[in-house]
Amino acid sequence: PKQSMLSSIYFGGGTPSLAPIEMIQEILRRIMNKFNMDVNAEITMEMDPGTFTLDYLQSLKDSGINRISLGVQSFDDSILEIMGRVHRQSDIMDAIQMIRQVYGDTANVSMDLISGVPGLTPAKWIKTLEMASSLKPSHLSIYDLQVEDGTVFGTWFNKATLNSATPTLPDEDSVAFMYKFTAGYLKSKGFEHYEGMLVHFLRIESIITSSTHYDPFLE
Image (cartoon, rainbow, N blue to C red; front, side, top):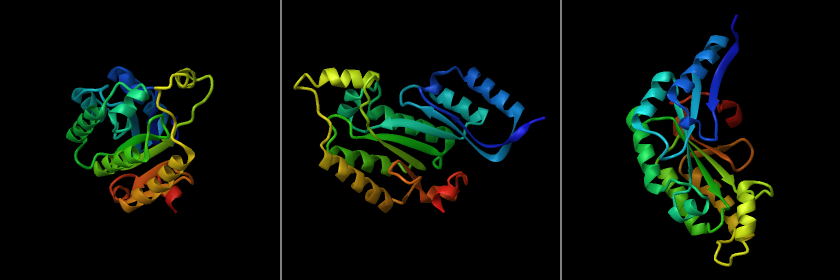
């Protein structure tokens, strides 16, 4: 017999969209054989711009994937380069266009952004927020960079700081400004902050057309 009802499935990173579509379909098949699925279940795939094609997206949709989480990180090419990302702003725009071509203008798409990275200024952060909100994603996840010893980025950054040409981390005043500005700006653009800290923002307009997965956090 099948076990309890599932209302959400999440294919998280790394970059699961690099997996062959047949693997994704097989995972879903096994899950659905074992569990009952809510009729409004949200099935999310994390994807990075520049790592998928229109055909792959269509196959995801046909397989039941109904939400895309896009690893945007920044709309500033210089910041993306510092972070070691292979995509650029043009790839982000192409990815959004493809997602909406397959899923329609009301596509359930989330974007990840990262603040506090080396070289990031308040002006560049404001520009990224403006571009992100103008694309009207249903959801925004915003993370502040934490440089952890022992990680690949931490090792690189600690070595890179010996080079005076390496961009530095934003100072505390800049980080505080970005924190406060983000909350106020996104609220003015129709996003509701939830989960108790400056991480997740749900566009209120999308609540009507998407799922009820966020209801407990918004009460």
